[in-house]
Image 1 (cartoon, rainbow, N blue to C red):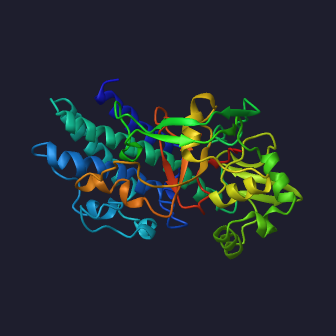
Image 2 (cartoon, one colour):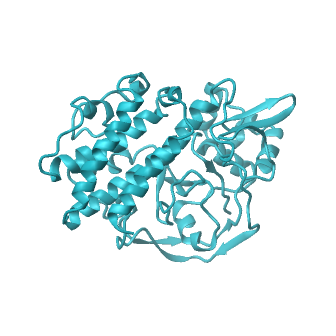
Image 3 (cartoon, helix red, strand yellow):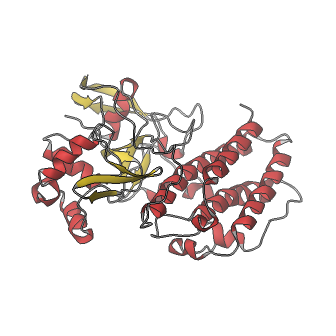
Length: 382
């Protein structure tokens, strides 16, 4: 696909995700980690304006002098920005002005993409599009968090349950001990945290063909899993008790039956569907209860070609660390991944909320171990 067409397709999808929203849905921020839809729309636009148009399109006029401060996320290189927890306080500019901002920047990008551009600029635009695809997934999960904490559990879209999928395979895949190549070769687009390709020795292991289902996890709940300290890491046990966690995010016991909130509204939990919205702490506790474990990210990638993956982000037992030879790029782009390589765990695969053409077996997602709000699940190893 031509870069101009890809730009239009990616940018259009962000707005398509927002079509079912009412104006009031664009603004709330119930917790610091979940940004409002309006902010996602503006921030992904800011990236193209700040990183690309200001430097590469002669005569370009920025849309608004305040938008750099309001919609920068974490780029210290670029300057001051609003606090993350205050994104929901940005009632002005309004939603219509944010859409006007997107139109303004899109016009500038169409002009730029109609010209000859350098390979370096092409790479930066590709990064911007993949950045927006990341925000499309966050837009879905952040929006779900807001709607899921609305006391009437409103429907976003009756066709978008996203939790109804089931496993297609069962059993175990045996993997031989040996040396495996891990990481991206850099031949096509990847994020810098996927580099460099390197060799890893793995002992023999088995990895499950299926992800843990709601029914299987219900057995853990009913066996008192959330009250068994012997299943939990010390940090996980503290998190559980301090936050009174007794079940996956969005689960509610109503009249003796478990329900969960989906983007299609409140539904009775399907025991055959794949589990979602669990933290690393919960994934680890469940694996321990089963007498099994989570795979490392290297085991996951080594086995990925024979696994059915992509329905849930899958927690691994690997800390988020740089690969051998990793180098932080200069400037703002260098703040994209490297500075977050501390106190986070790696998730592999993709999820039902991941944008089309945005997944690959070398992709390394990463979150703090207590987060539940992504479509995250459990694959076991032994």
